[in-house]
Length: 144
Image 1 (cartoon, rainbow, N blue to C red):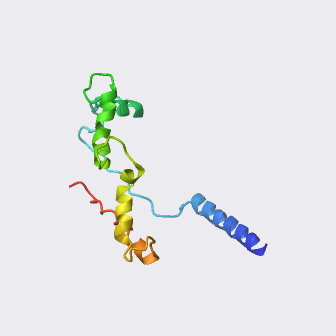
Image 2: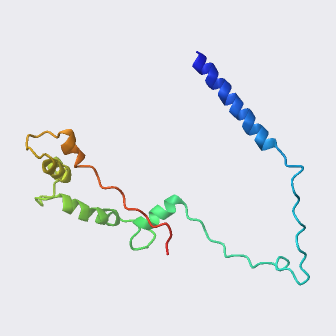
Image 3: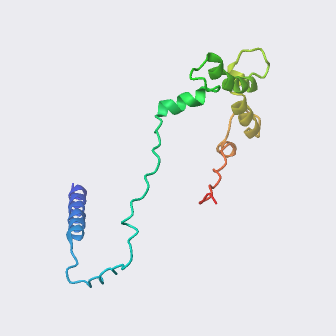
């Protein structure tokens, strides 16, 4: 109970301090010198040219454009299935046109078998640690 009261008191105290800092004014502080006045024509006086307006595409329009491979304004079944055929063919190892669970889980099964050092069908904590994915590659900070 005392911990709760102490926590509540501390949070009220912190909020009060934050409010006082936020409301504080530096009335006696040094004043800034006046801004210099330009004698020539101001660049702010000239009207800037308006940028061209871009039409914003909705999320669904972007998704539709990605699926419409031949850009004819309609999506055919073949356009939806073609990107998936290569992935299916890669998984269908016996080329029978059917995907069994073992074929679908092939990479997981192989990773398990390669990590199982003593071939007992179980992974110890040390063996399982070898299956951890590699850390993500560091992205460059700038695009230069």
